[in-house]
Length: 352
Image (tube, rainbow, N blue to C red; front, top):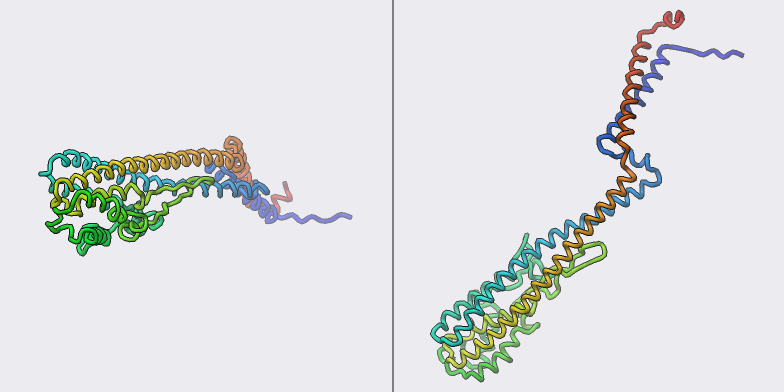
């Protein structure tokens, strides 16, 4: 039995137009792949391996986030190092002034002024902030580490120093009668009541609002590090103790023997404090290097992951160029056929 086949220019034209649409879609995809270097539809091309590609990209995002955080960490530590360098210079200047002062009582007023300036520098540096975060406040980064020691009314620290002095000697530090304080009594005060003002408990109660817990940062997928130093560190307390004993214990009115005791004690404290300060700077330097090394490792990991992604998603640009040429030729042919079909009539078909 013969089955009739119905032929029309409309049917032929419709099929040709559908072919043109498919070729155009393939051409657009190929041009996209040529410009991006990646498959136009990664999911369709990779199939089950798409999850691998997605996972690799998530890994890159994760380690890049760590590197971005590391940039902030390095900036904070650089700010901390700058503050510590300033404090080290101030301390050395004060130490240099103490040596001649021990043999020249006539400059007592000068050394007191230098002690006040050094104390001001100490609190200024420990109150250094970056983007609203205090660098030496530990995990309490939104809290100012030190109040102004020389404020009016007196700060808690200044009041504690005065109260301890009055309790020991029965007079205020600004009383001219402090000249009667013996060297032995002053030494006892410095070693006991005054020294106790800088203990852990009293430092937190009267001097510093900083946390004793430094900021701990994740610097790589597998590594964390303490990336800050807090104002509770012993080096800062030793320096504060030295600066305060010269500036706040009536030094100018003390007799020469008692002044010698105070200056000798202050000299020892500044020397010890500077030594401890060097260790703090060294710790930060080592941590900075660890963060830099972690960033280098992240760059290496990122490069490896990108190469892995390229292996899955990248296309052969030479093959794509050839494909675009072939598709363009096919598209031109399809357009020509469509144009010829549009001009056909039934008589043309029957007489062809």
